[in-house]
Image (cartoon, rainbow, N blue to C red; front, side):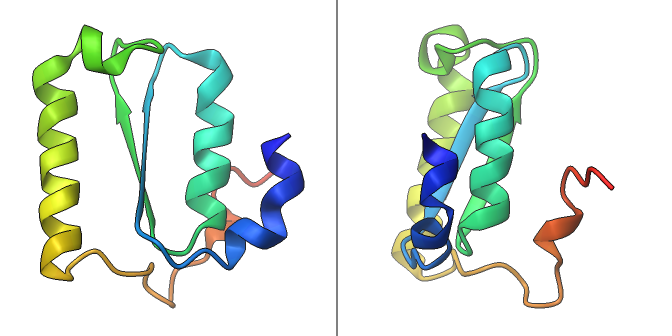
Length: 93
């Protein structure tokens, strides 16, 4: 299970873009988990979309992907701002 990899994912230095549809119930929580855990991650949630984002919203999917790749190539995709607190995402207490 992906949650079992938390310690290893927290050390990941590669850029990561997580995309999920807001109607993809099985991927929303894991996507938030990845955003919270991987330091150089970004999270894009596409509205009124399910699991096949590239087929449901091809233009939006391609735009997010192109922007991500351009930022990575330019060195502009960095780890999150150290002032942010990922523990605040989806707090349960």
